[in-house]
Structure formats: structure tokens, C-alpha cells
Length: 135
Image (tube, rainbow, N blue to C red; front, side, top):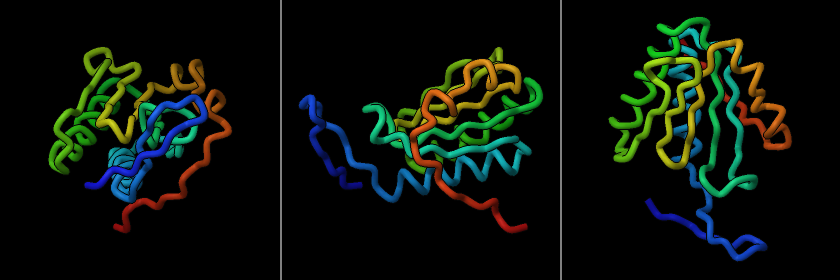
């Protein structure tokens, strides 16, 4: 994968998102949807922060569902060739973070999602339109 770079106003060098990172974010959203995740949102965050291109935000109704979504997303990322996939919060499963570099997936239990309200925090980031897989 070729990486495009650009420099910010403060001189930091950042990657330019490519189509693979968008495809990865959308597929993570679809996986969450297949596991019956709720309120799935994909944010194009690249212009807001240096560490990633996309956030995928998902609500889960319970611990088991959050862990199932996280496990399937992690498996997809590993199978897709992302070598350094990091997962935080899996055991407790209140807020599971899956990070492959270009995409960070946040799986929240419903009460914590509203408490942290990342959509408000990153509200000016463009939302990505995506569709569930056809059954």
C-alpha cells in the first residue's frame, strides 16, 4: 500500500487516507451491523487528528454482544493483513477499542456511549455513508 503524506500547518507530517482505509472502516461497520450493533456511525476523522483516518462508533446492549463485535472486527482486521491490531477493554467490555492504525473501532455499551459522546466531541468530522450487506 502506498502512503501519501502531507504536512500540517504546525509542520507535523501525516499520512493521507487511501481507499483501503475507507473500505476497512465500512467493512468494520458492516461486521458490527451483522452482530446487531446499534447506532453505527463512521466518521472521517483524518483532518481532525493525526493518529487515524476513521472512527467507527458502535453501541452494544450487553457485555457479550460488545465482545462478539470486537472479536469479529479484530479477526477481520488480522485476516485483512493488518499486523498490529491492538484491543483495549475487551474483558470488561464497557468500551472496547480496536485499533489497526488507519481505523479505530469503538464498541460502547449504551450507557457509556452517551456519557462519552464522541459524536459531539468530533461533531464537525464528516460522517461516511455506508450500507449494510445485502442478505
